[in-house]
Structures are given as structure tokens and as C-alpha cells.
Length: 101
Image (cartoon, rainbow, N blue to C red; front, side, top):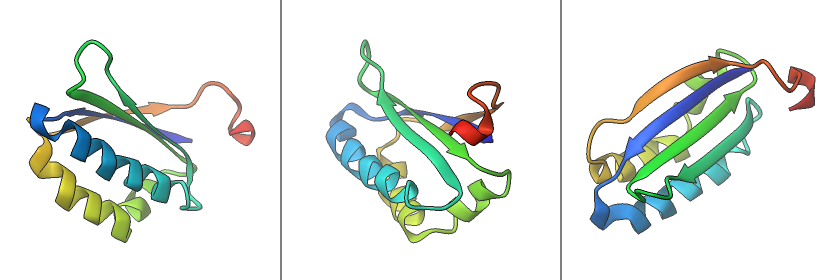
């Protein structure tokens, strides 16, 4: 598994619009065969901070994800709502076993 955690800071006036756009992207992403999991979470003590935890089956699947229409629509909608550029951290899976995802 190839796991990407995306860190996003949104301008306060765009919180609800960002949530709507990202929920659509998350739901569509789960339809991709290379996506095992796609979590979208919001920080409780500062609601302008969000995380996406994306679990891909192979190292090639993130590139395939970035070719989809729903990802490109999300980028077009969401990027202007961000207070700063998003960052990401890549992880490797330790548990559960990959066949259990």
C-alpha cells in the first residue's frame, strides 16, 4: 500500500464550499480500482485545517488518480479556497496486512 496524507489549510470563508467539493472528490475517488481508502477529516480546534488520508494499492495509483476528471475538477475548485499550498506526507503500511484493506 502507498499512503498519502494531505495537509490543507482553507480560508475561513470557504470552509463549507471546500467540504462540499472535497466530499465529492472523496466519494468519486473510492470508485477507482487503485484506491483502497480515502478519508477526509477536519481538525476540531481549528476548522480551517483538513487532512485527506489516501490509501493506494500500488505506487502507480496516485498518478492514475491525478488523471481523473473528478480530481482535476476538485483542484480547479479547491485550490483557490486554500490559505496556503497543500503539503503531503507519504507513508508505508505496517498494519493491517495489505490483503485486509
